[in-house]
Length: 387
Image (cartoon, rainbow, N blue to C red):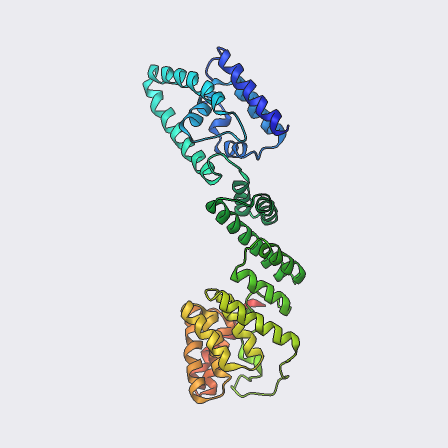
């Protein structure tokens, strides 16, 4: 059924209903207007053809539902999807409202129950239609529901089409559309990154940026994909001192030298630009600091992690990164500073094996072997649980 046919069907049903003397339906029975979820689906045009037809057929036979629907329309709580013009709505609402008043006045005890039900239904539908511009284009409502239900691809595609087809949107509509586009794109890109599908990450970020939606977290995922890293925050997999050429006694051994090439230079430039553009993105700060550690640029790495700690003092990863950058400067002063941040990381996340091992290695390096022992044991215990 296309829009024109649906509109015609609605008008025919309401006009026929007004001309009939159908008795009121029993409010105790099942009615579409008492089913909030079904009502929402129908109002935003999200029912399949079979269920949509069933609603129309029910309205043709049930004056109870017609009265409830007309009251919602008349109160401004509901506008039917792409539906009746104002004259049709008035023709329906006025006689129905009269019948409804007569019925309620004749039964004062039922009046309270009906009034409560009508208010609840009206409030629910008012929220839905407020989101869609009081009965206008319902695309944003459906896209938002897709996003909440985890249908990220559907939400992304729906709002992409909406933005492409509507160039002169009201500010509120554009803001909501861009929010849905960014969030759905981020969820899809994050999943692709974890699966090592780096091209998908780049494609998704491109789709959002082409529609003028750029965010720190999507930029971060794009750079991670360019680096070939499957972790959204590389510190979650590369934040252990023993990964950087340190023995458990704190002594350093020679590891492979970092790679300096055109790709490295390009990625550093992109990370620096991204951090400057999105200074409130902790993931970018953490990953830029991680990148600089990988390039043995420990002082600049410490600057990034210091900014991350200032942004979120309760981030175990930020304290871990700062501890790594300070420890690797190989000065007594910086190693003692590193100890402070490793202690903070363990305090914030006591069941983190990496944090416990870093703290233990740092303590041994400072000659505090007895104090380090419990943290080594905790690390082994946690590693055993992981296996």
